[in-house]
Length: 298
Image (cartoon, rainbow, N blue to C red):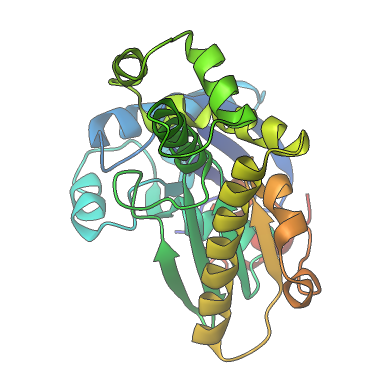
């Protein structure tokens, strides 16, 4: 049975956002809740989604309950088949629950449900292309072995440079001085201890230091950002090559404005502004079943 209301979810490692629409495409409310990464904590993710949905429904004066809505959730970790399968075994109160990856939801949102390429570069990094009804994913392998060009990667690279500068393996620079001052350390072992429990989010908070140093003429910082930009350029070209056609390109995330000046001119010519957010993108995924709702521009 076709539901009269649908909620699009954008769920990540920090929070999840909910968007409620009716059958005519009218936006009825937005809400947020806690983390929703189904690979790291599936039960917490479900709880956050339910909480966000309750909150967004509470904003309306309509007699709607959770059993009256279809939920289309774009969540972190859904690109891992086992994590997605496990998550879908959990009980939920909704009329229907559809799950896709947060990157796919973001891509569909950015391109209004149409074909296109999306590069995400925030705390982490990844890319996806939507073409001929299917997604091609590249990157997004996590901080330990991937996430090149991301804020976490740049922060970690900055710390590594500071250690090498301490040992006189690399020349001391404005970047190394800024990292040392930020961490309030005077020896390499103190630095190691200061970052020993750092998460990607913690390293990501060091990224602005590298950007500020580059803006002040630091060649080490410029080199790191050029390295990150080269990766994003190669990632973008690989995704475009996988479709064998020219598609619109969106580059989003907190680090996007930093890298855009480095991007090759031919790629800049394909850049477009995102049309919608990932919550809309999650709803667009159900386009075949909800033509009226998904085609509405809100």
